[in-house]
Image (cartoon, rainbow, N blue to C red; front, side, top):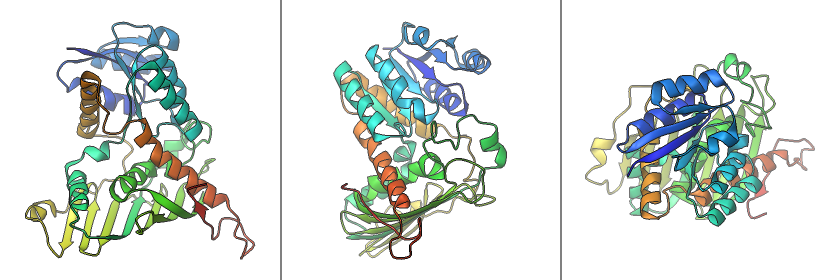
Length: 352
C-alpha cells in the first residue's frame, strides 16, 4: 500500500516532514500547500507533489490519504478540521493548537469524520528517552520525588523579526513556553504523569515580541513529585536541554536527548551503555537536522491508519501539554495578593 501525503506549510519544519516521509518505504508526497508559492514550489521540486496556494484545491487533490500540518500553530486546528471533514487523516506538528477549545473541536471533528488524529512530539520516539520511560515504568527510580527541566536556548533577533507569526499571540499562542518549551512539558507529563498544581512566572526580558521569551514554573504532580521548569530563548549562546529526574532509588539525567548519568541503587545492566555524554552541544538550533524522530512519528501514525489502532500521541495525548501550558499562563496572570504585585508569586490549580 502506498500512502499519499499532503504537506501543509512551506517552512523549515515542512522540509523536515518531507525528508522524513520520503525516507519511509511506500510513502509519496502528493501535494504541498503554502501561502508562499515559491516555497511550496521548491518543496515539490525537491520532494515531489503538486504545489498549491489555494487551500480548498489542495484538500481536493487526489490521491491523498493524510495531511501533515506544519503551518503556524494558531492554524493547526482550523486546517486540521477542514482536512478531517474531507476524509483525510491528520498528523499535526506540536502544539495541537494554541487553545484547548480549538484542540477539542479538532479532536471531536476527527472522531466524527472517522479519521486518525496525531500530534508530533518526536522526543517520545528517541531511544534514550524511551529507555528512561521504561526504567520509570519498571520502578527502577522508586517513588518519583523531583524533576528539574531546563530549556535554556537562544534565538537571534532575526528569528522573530523575519517571521510573521513567531512570538505573536494570534499565531504562536505564546513564546518560549508554547513554542520551544512545549516538547519538554510533554516529556514531563509522559514520564511523571499529570500535574495537579502550578506556580509560575513569565516575562519578556530580551526580545521585542508580544509573548514571553522566559518562563519558570513549579509543578506539583499528582503522584506527589515536584518539578521545576525553565524555558527561555534569551540564554546566549544557547545550551542543550537538560532534564534530571530523582526518585527514592536514585537519579537519571538527560542532556540533549541522551542519558548522561545513571545513578541508581539498583542500576539496570543496560545503564552503563546509555550514560554517555553527547559532545554535540548545539542544542539551541531552530533547524531540525536529524529527522529520525519525525520519521518514527510518521511511521507510527501510518501504522495506526493501516491497522486501525491509536497513534502513540493522539489528539487527547497531544492536548495534555497544551492544557498545562494554559494553566501556567493562567498562574502567571494571577496577582500576588500578599506582595501586591502581579507576576511575582502565584499558583493555579489545574483542576479548574
